[in-house]
Structures are given as structure tokens and as C-alpha cells.
Length: 276
Image 1 (cartoon, rainbow, N blue to C red):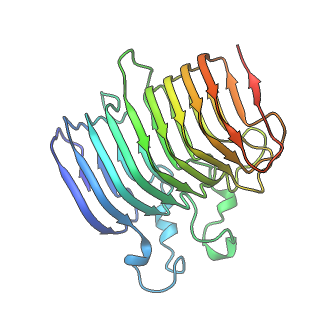
Image 2 (tube, rainbow, N blue to C red):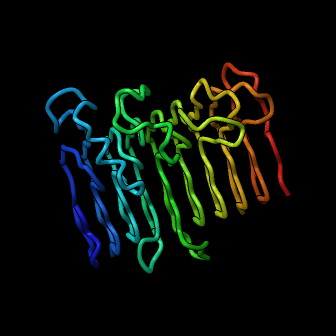
């Protein structure tokens, strides 16, 4: 489904199925597009056990393949979307002349993004250990704008991303409210990994979320804030890694506040690194 010519006031809803490549692509949206009640699940589409039908071979030929791609779209609302699989869950990016702007996303569930139903390489024609490591949600603009992009995620759930779950760059006004990040970084492990990463952003808010590393990734950190002006990280719960002093990395960022963040069941505490 593609709306990439100039468009506005479009309503896309009540769709149940699956796609080999990008399911939905919206760009150059004028105002008030709505996408709601979408279920992308291969079980609804293919006969036989999955992944025995090898749909993943099609999904991962193109490493930019995403369930939902959003470019410039003024006041777009995306809600009540369930997705199983795909290389990237949501790819918000500047695909044309204008950057993404005014996007509200709520009540989405993405499971096993860039992955499948099993970590056993014998289940696939492709070996997941050889795949480039992407993210469940990517939010990019070509450059940081003085005007606000206003991109907000509320009450969403992300399960078992292959590497980091959320990656944003060059966004002015980004909010993550009440997001559940479960068992992130399933394969991409080590001290340099993180569940959430921002770079060259402004006015970033991460509030009231549950942020969990894949339990075997004991060295990864939860949040990495880089080159960011204005950020609030508050009322979050962390779980999954055991390296003390490494749960939040803040590098070359200013005007930030951390408050009332709690880590459950591990020894990792405090901010791991403060840059200038």
C-alpha cells in the first residue's frame, strides 16, 4: 500500500494479512492521515508451519524492507498495529524533500523484528548470524531542523529485536512514553550495544517505560544519548544486564535531567558515562 504522491486525509484500516516487502509507505502527506487496526501476521496468510514457507527469504533480500515506512506526513496517526517479522518494524525517514513531521504512534506491537520465530539457524535458508544488524524502529531526518519534527510514541510494545530496538538521529522533539522494550539485542551483544540510541537530536523525552536487554547480553547498556540538546529520562524501569555503572550513557550532550529511574534484579546502577 503506497501513498507517495501528494496526499491528505487518507484512512487506512482493518487490514489483516502479510507482505513480502514493504507493507505500507506514506510520503508527502499533507495532513491528518490515519492508519489503524492493522495485523501483519504470516499465520493469517500462509498454509503450513512458519517459517517452513521461507517467507523470510523474501523479506530479507532488501535490508531496507520495513513493515511501515513514513516520510513527510503532517499530523499522521498510526495506531493498533501488530507486526510479526520484517527486517525493520517502522522506518521513519526523510525520503523526499521534506523531513518527517507531526507523527503520533500508539498501541503498536512488533515481535521478532528482523528475526523470526526461532534463533535456530537450521530453521532458515538464511543464517541470522550473517545478517547486518538493524533496529526495530528507526527515526531519521537528513539534518537537525530548527522547527520541531514532533514525533511521539505512546503505549507501544517491542519484543526481541535482533539488535537495538530504537534508533533516532537529527530529530527535534522526540517522545517515548510508556513503551515496553522486551529482550532487546538478541544477537548484537557487548558493551557497545544499547536498547535506545539517539544522536544529534533535540528535546528527547523517555518516560515511564520498561527497558529490558536480552538476558544473555549482560554487558549492553539501556540508553545511549549522543550529541543531544535537551533530554529527560525519568520514571523508567530497567532490567537484564549486570555490569555495574553502565545502564545509561550520555555523551557530548547538554541540558538533561535523569529522575526516578529504577533497575530491577541486577547489579548495574547509575550513569555509565557522562560526556561533555
